[in-house]
Image (tube, rainbow, N blue to C red):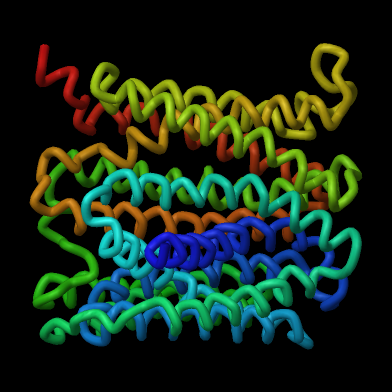
Length: 457
């Protein structure tokens, strides 16, 4: 009975993290208005979270080895819970951005730590337990936007953060009662210099772009160029650091192989498009189509369900299909449906086939979710079998590129929104650009491994 309670505790922490990853997008228009800011700065609440996760995730394994799973899990819960409360109290957009960074640091430790806890307690059914545990993300993606829409429309955007506080405190209590101290291994080296250089390069690049878009003048142009050059300088030193580090965050040797480069560039594109661009769907629904906050969250439900079902089916058929063609199909479908979402083109007058606006958006998002669901299992497995002994490194690289893509994508897309004369024009540019990005990236997929099918043939 005890191990099932442990599974529930670990699973609910991941569920809380999964919901928080989607719920903020629904509250985006409300806290932009309440904190008297613009879309440019509000978007930092999304991108800073991805940056925090990118920085912290590679270090989580080292922290567990050094301090044990129970301590790291408790600290991550405390950070996530405390920063959630602080986000709810945030008096300004700058404070909210800072607290969202801390929230990302805490949340980034949930997945590797909780996965290890589940694995330890179900050694005889490890694969099934981890598979069930991982499916919690899909459930959170379905519930998050709906719950967020209801909370924001009924109460305030601040309560999407406050709701984490009693849940987090309960989970910390359960953790202290149920978990035993795990064996601490010999402390391994943590590439703190690499983490600092990577985070610094991303932040300086994004600050430079942000400043340029907010107030264009000769002074801001010079300052923006200066910040961007600092970011490039730090990124060059990051690559040099990773070449000589004993435990690098980024394994440079893997990036010297064409299939690995192609796979990770595709993961960067997935981050920019699938994660970054679609974080703005609630804002798009509210500002362009005048939907309510509650409905702006609900229209994401078909996309989440379609993604989960398509991913499950594709996972079983990967051995027959291989990796390449599911990604080609998925990229093509996402390209088409993303372009069709452009309000200044196909949704200018009447929606398709006599459907209402809500039904049309839900249908297009459902098809888009099917495309994403076909892509993710293939993208997740691509290249792993080329070097199975480095599976952990490959998975870490994949997640890092996706999160970097999401962070950069959010920044670039908000710049487009900010400099556009209105949101209709801004979202038209965004959806057409993202759709074309999917389409023009398809040739890249042919540089990746085809999968088992090609080997068996």
